[in-house]
Image (cartoon, rainbow, N blue to C red; front, side, top):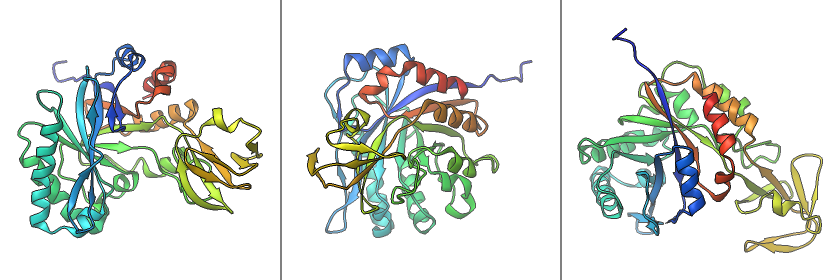
Length: 316
């Protein structure tokens, strides 16, 4: 009996806006859902014109967080294509110093790095992670894992971190006009699961957001995150097709984007039944005694979906 262990799961959320400014409704939602950890993007690292790694879109804490904050740093892959080992070592030190300066709390229990690495830059990215880890003392280092990295660790490598966060979303083809849902498609996602236990412990991230994708003559133009069904039901502007598309009926401007007559918008979201199915699939991939199920991301509509979140969490 003493050798038995009880596995536990906790909820968490991502916060991806530059301004950390939680409303009373959002705070109440976090308390009601017993969400005690917010994975907060602190800044992006991108490449400047003179081939230097620079932080952009730094977080601004307008309100003081009541929950534990885990800082997340998003790094574009071009950084590791361009920098040599000396510059990467300096980058690790600069990233850590920047995190400490921006931190609104006394200390970190975890730092997470988000980078969609591939085999060609794995050595340089992993070197960065090792250098960052050497500066962190007892703080845990985690990084995001995409589905193809999860399925093919022999090809992409396994990052030298304490744990990963498997991102079970953005798995479809945005560029494809025939795609049904590029955010969450369990038929696609299931093809990446069930291939054995991943070498490092994992948390799991599920989506809970929506967007519209703009197509012109069948060619992808851009993501329009602010256009949801409340806008698309305006029959003076849009005509719904038999599939998931809405056709623009007249030239107009929405959110500073010019929409032409005949343009098409594909609305994508995360239906509860698909999220429950995703949670059921991922429940078989758990490989540690304490697992976090993270929802991307904390936005105003999330506070109205407590029942949905609870049912998805229960399925996991």
